[in-house]
Length: 65
Image 1 (spheres, rainbow, N blue to C red):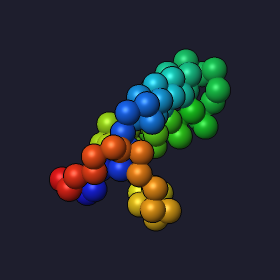
Image 2: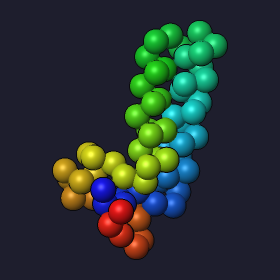
Image 3: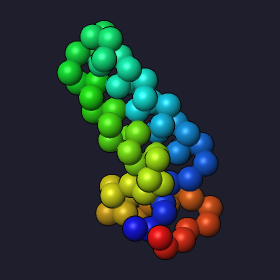
Image 4: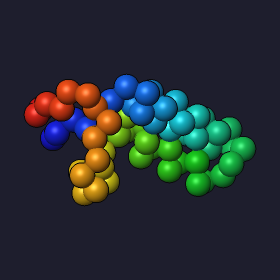
């Protein structure tokens, strides 16, 4: 998979995803908080399928994995 998520974008995805999952576990925001799995996974894997479809890239040096 091609790396297309980098820097601040990656950190923001991991933080927001973890926060949503935590809030879902605590019952604060309900089951919708589990959507946090998506930004968390894309941040950890450094790739976003939607970015690939739209031709976007926030990674300064794109590499193949």
